[in-house]
Image (cartoon, rainbow, N blue to C red; front, side, top):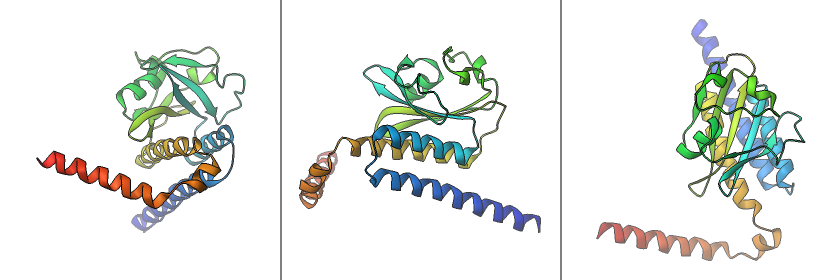
Amino acid sequence: MAKGKELEARVERLEQQLGVYQRVSRLMVRELSLADTLQAVARLVQEFTGCDSCLLYLIDDDELVLCATSSPHPAEIGKVRMKNGEGLTGWVARERKLLAITSEAYRDPRFRTFSELPEDTFESFLSAPVIARNRVVGVINVQHRMPHRHTGAEMEMLTTIGEQVGCLLVLARLTPAAIEAANHVELVKTHGHIARRDELADGE
């Protein structure tokens, strides 16, 4: 009986996780501003994880800039900046690795304090890189006020959301007119020929 309930709970959690991915995908195909879309993604992550805050940073030259948050920090968006490689968030961007800290994240030697953000005092920290075309273009953070042991589902979800946001950023650079005018078949052929040439070159 206990195993049956455990299985049911696991299936329910997987369905919730899939639901988050589907909702992010729908955001990607709607004509919303990028700022509104990123805010919506942050709120979806907060809803799934039950965290107290989700912050999304994007890279601008050699800095990470706060661009979206699930919490009401409108004054800090675009103003909170850190050097790439600085703090826990910068470490994730530089190392291109998921980072999970259960408690006392503020005691980690890599941590950097931002007086503008209450998240500086939060206990747990989960962070994943935002990836676009195999490049790190940002970082997404999940934080809890109290100690929190992150589940495998939460880690997997944040990693995948980081990849989805990366795709979203690539799409955001294209206007509707450019998408309509593009010859997608030719694009597939061109990239296919390039990939085959690379494979042949590697085999020589």
